Image (cartoon, rainbow, N blue to C red; front, side, top):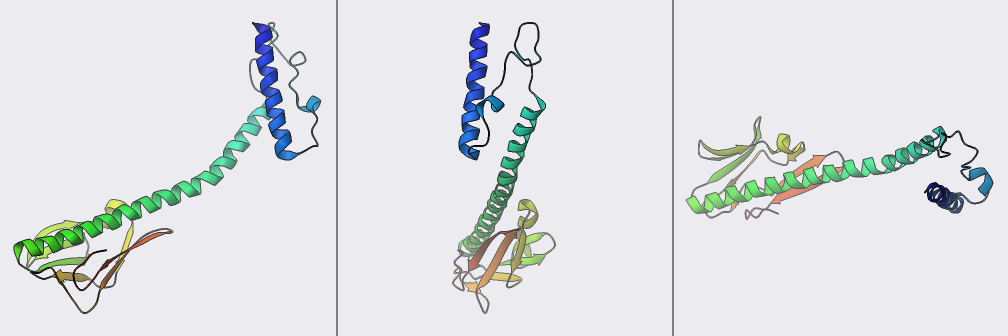
Length: 183
């Protein structure tokens, strides 16, 4: 059984040497890299029981290098997910306000410039409000402070409405046309 363990340890060390040799070229010999089973500080059974400090440093440096590559990409992906979810939530809220105007045959306004976030109202009655910016952790800017949908679903106002949803480098824009279409 001990011979099998020595064979496995030698095979793993040899595979590691070959991978290192292919990656970094010549300059390291097999005898300098090979794990010498008989010459190490061992227990009475002849097998090593732990890892050397050099092995730990190599593993830690490879882990740090991989994390340095992966973490920025992961954060950007999380930002994109938050921005996409907030833009979808915003588009759904605007579409719901338009559908409510069509169903009730009354004008419905959506206000953006409120401390509580987005507010949908009919006349002075607040139908619902939603703070999309804090719910998704994004920043929302818009070209106008409100939009109104008429009884037939058309948007009132002099121009189209553009709403920009941003979180660090991730950005999405939601447009509302004069015809009330949200895209």
